[in-house]
Amino acid sequence: MSGALLAVAVTVALPHYPASAFAGGRAEVRKQAEASMLVTGTIDIDAIGNVTSYRIEQADALPKAMLDVVDGRVRGWRFEPVVVDGKARPARAPMQLRLVTKQEGDRYLLRIAGASFSTYDKNDTESPRLKGGKLSPPKYPELAYFNNVSGTVYLVARVGRDGSVEEAIAEQVNLRAVGTEKEMAQFRYLLGEETRRVALRHWKFNFPTTGPDADAPFVSVRVPVDFVFHGQQQEAPGKWIAYVPGPRQEVPWRNWDAAVQAPDAVLAGGIYPDKPKGPRLLTDLDG
Image (tube, rainbow, N blue to C red):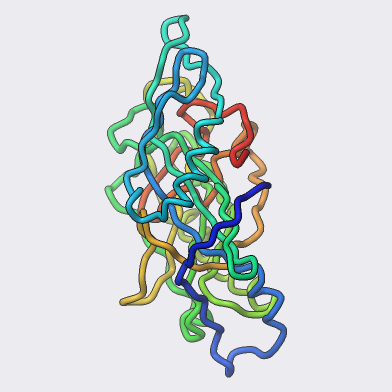
């Protein structure tokens, strides 16, 4: 994927695990670390799928050089025309972009790593909605807690017609600390499995009652879950955060294209449709 070199500073850092936990071999993992920001806004496309305008709500948080790179990418996008009542029409959609930088010498390489053009509305009867108003949170795995390991699990859950979670997979787990490859894999597993366990045992949803999925055998949702300590900065739109991205896992029941809708293009604390509901991007995300 392409990117642009920028002479701007991004002041975020990743801690090591405590020396008492594990030992050695962390330099190569540190090279994988990224600084990331999620920005939100809207995008307007015309009847043939060209971008006519867009808005980023957190534009003031980005240097002009970065905004120029994003502008060049977004204005070059082409979408599948939005058809309403059999006719292609202009459309406006919500937009979430995952911006990522990595240091190259004294400069930073910026890329758009993921995007989402749909949101979750708790009153939307065409999408699965949380039953009971609140998700049961997973417990912090003791080994991760006592080694000061925090991160985010991007879970995808398959919801059956009775509203229970039939299957769940941690599609990606990003960690906010640096260890060896073996350490990172162990902590990703611990955080992902605890989230998966709680989803399978305790999460319940109302199945869609209208729309194309009302008669479907199952629906699929994305649920990002943060494991953070009291007082630790939580990710928010317009804020840089440092992490080591985990590998992306295949979702076995997914039979639709979710390549653009990256696992981490949404914030923790929400429930999102796994099958994109917004306009479909036809061109490459990052140019």
